[in-house]
Length: 298
Image 1: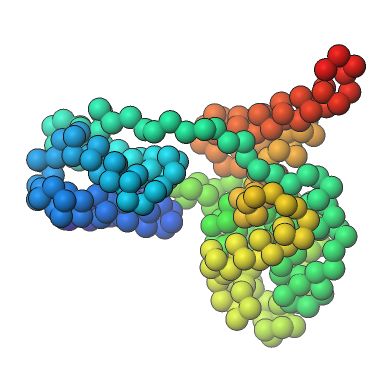
Image 2: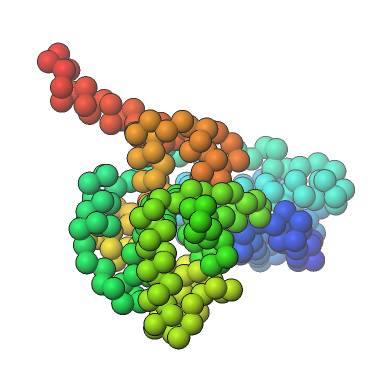
């Protein structure tokens, strides 16, 4: 069974070109599933597994790990992809996942910052003009002004920035490229960052990662999260203060200010419009609040 899992992981890594984060998550989920089969059910062949065995694994992670439904559904999704792979490659004839239903979850609206909060952070706060200050401000600026994902920010090269055209090339999921326009303010901040980097390290990041950590190396996921969390704490009390909140903020503010939903979809790099439509709910909620505050009969 382990060999089949390794083949699947190799497939999603090399052919499907899933992100490193997704590959690691799938690998962890499937190894956990195999452990349940061999240790708890004494099953040593994938051909012996039926939907009852899969359900027992789902129950076990619900009871033992106390995971939320959304987390369990992610694991179910990993298993669903794995079984589709096996059927497609004729390792199995029937797919037992056909009888597995994802857990019901409450739909949560994406969290976002108010426009005044993010503008106060970027325009009203002193980040400092040294390397660290300018770099930190550029992290927030790019995440909010482009809506890019954390992994996309980390993998940016200096060569992705076109100063003259005021645009940046982003490599998204499945290695799909998209071009995002940059404002004159963002371009000015990037140029200031180049100068600060050259002064701090003695070299400008021309052929390396655009954004560097304190040691001049590629930033880690944790590094970006800590930086964003640190600054968002200064302006908001919302529950989550992650880089993805700035992506939600970008999309919500664009929509609230009249941007076309399809245009936002392209800027975010969404494959389907349905993924972008979640932001319309935030707009509707805002309209409801305005209606309740303003209408005499509300």
